Image (cartoon, rainbow, N blue to C red):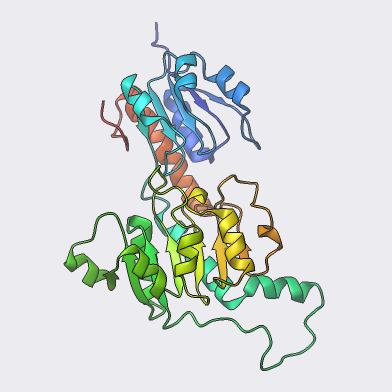
Length: 324
């Protein structure tokens, strides 16, 4: 009699290469194709499952773990894992894994896309052109800001922060960074970056790009006080986590001209936006596109599937975030 395959719940359809790998080794249930599962649906489907392949939008907490006593691994389809109670999972002997490295370049590309877009007012210009409000070329029409030669401040110098710094070199930008742990001087020299204390970075940067992880210490890292320190000509870029920014404070800072603009890919209560944010022309709003390329999402799917197979079947090594 053949051994039964372990049971896996994938909460939402992922690229086929990931599902194909899972189906070779596991009995797979896909929760939904084109929407996130409700909390009730998630709790109902996860019962008796050995593994959960979760999205960042799925709350994996104590209640869920109690509902699924046979759960052995939670494989998050993301580099972040603040949607998972890792401490509780560890206590229960559940491995928690994620998908680092594979989305670094795609996210860094998007951060720079937002930076260029908001600086040169491309999306704003697209809207007025489509609306027929562009009448003629003029010397003072729709002026933006030079990116080349400007100063970029990076908050959080992990993989993505470093990738953004590399892109900035192509624009001859002066790059400062602030991070919980300072890089070795040799690494700073290689990247062409200089360390600054947090407040000094805010004061000196023309663009501030956020790449810090989200936790209790970084909640609303950028708020009313921080906006008051930034230049009136400065721009905020966020492709990390929405809750790093106090969105109502951002709206007020933009309305009052404390900063010049913002490029956002993530939001504190997404997909909902803070009141007034959508009405500001000085903001470029992307719908969480950081890793949204065919190639990157495919690699994420394979990595998430490999994590499940490694933990349940002992094939390969998983990218685990906790120690059991």
